Each structure stands twice: as C-alpha cells, then as structure tokens.
Image (tube, rainbow, N blue to C red; front, side):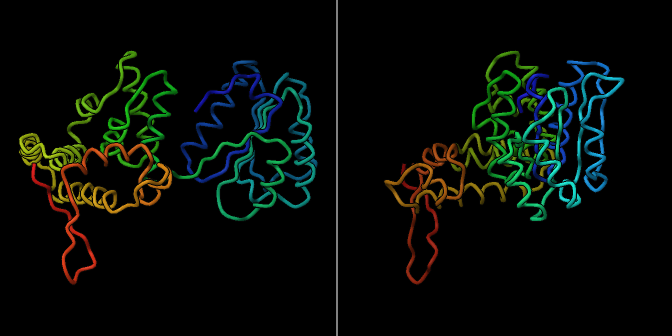
Length: 300
C-alpha cells in the first residue's frame, strides 16, 4: 500500500470497505501517521458510527481550540444512524482542509446504497476485502514493490506456499526479504533459503520438480522433507494440485485471450507461463467409458 502524505490525507475522506482487519488497520494507521507528521499535536478521534448523530459529527469535524489538524476515524459505518447520513454526505462533498476523515464499512449489504453515494461524493476508497488464494501471489509482488524491491512470480508463489494465507504474515515476510536483499531481486531460491524449513515449501518444491520431470531434484527434496518430518499428505496434496493445474491448462480452449484462458483454467494470468512450461512434458489420455481425462507423461 502506498503511504499517504499529509497533503494526500488532509481534506480527504478515506473509505475503507471490507472485513480484512490487517488491511483496514494498516490503512487507518497510515492516515493517522500522515496527519501526525504534519502536526505532532493533531487531535485524534475514534468512534463507532452508531455514536455519530448530526451534532456529534459537526463537533468532531469542526476546528479545535487545541490543535490545528484533526484525524477522525469512524468504525462500523454500516451502523450509521439515518439522521447522520445527509450531514456526512454533505461533509464529504465539501471537506474541511485540516481534517482527515476515515470511514470503515466492515462488510455485508447493509448500507450498500449509502456507500455508492459516498463514492459519488468523492471519497478515496481502499478495499480491505479478504483476498482469494489465487490473488495472494500478485498481492505479494505489489507488497514487495512497495518496499522498493522486486520479486518474481515464482518466488511470490513460493512465499505464499511457505507462509500460507495470513496477510499479516505475508506482509512481514515481504518486508523482511525486501530489507535483507538490499536491492537484489528476490528469487524462489532466496525464499526457500529463508523459509526452507516450512513444510509447505518442501511440498511445493517436491511437486514442482516432479511435474517438471526433474527426477533427481524431486527425490533430493523428498528425502530432505522426510528427514525433517514433513507430513506426506502435504507432499501428495502439492503434487495433486500441480497436476490438476496442468490438466486444466491442457484441456483449455486455445487461441483465446490470456485473461479468458486464465479464467477457464482457474488461475491468475501470471501462472499461465509456468503451466505452459510444465505442460510440455505431459499429454491428456482419454480413456474409453470415462468422462475424466487423466494425465500421462509424454515420451522425452
């Protein structure tokens, strides 16, 4: 996430939508820090939308006798009282130049029409919806880029396999790698060096080598995994998942746009290149009286 400057935060209403606590907390914290950078004595207010009557809202957004700037954070926007809707919309359309207002709508359809009105009134929206698993690697790439470093798609996928779907954990790992690599590209070998003890990474490594036909590498990774007590279920699951991806790619329609192909295969667009390379050593075998098309390796 890009850190807002004081000029980008003040006189602006930031709308955070979604239930992901980490993204929401980080967005709110970034706005607060931006305001405090501009004025160390800035007034900081936190309240629930249910407390926000017309009078209360006018009070917290008006000039303070003790601070030149204000940061106001309103949580659970879906609970905003009806009589506060119009005052809030009017404020968003003409915000105070020395106030940074953050509104957080956690989730659900409650207040959806109001959100649409806020967007039209001119809020800056930050989405904090939980990411789907296939979106995580792309998120890692952007996160690392935000720290001024570079990570390739394969390494990002290895990091997700290592850390799991915990955004907070992925963010911490991305920051650590970016700081330690000191401008050098972050590759999958770097990720494995840092997180090679994770069972998930070893499962990924075994599967990747096996599907790519690198038998020696696959057995070497497998021996390491067993020596370190990795559950065989994690390895077979990784191999099965990799083979399903190759099978879907081989069975997909050819000659269509990359975005359409990615949707048909069920993977992000960046993964198509990897599947294309892996599929060169495989073919679909159609067996009689069976609807499924199992994979078989093609002669090398």
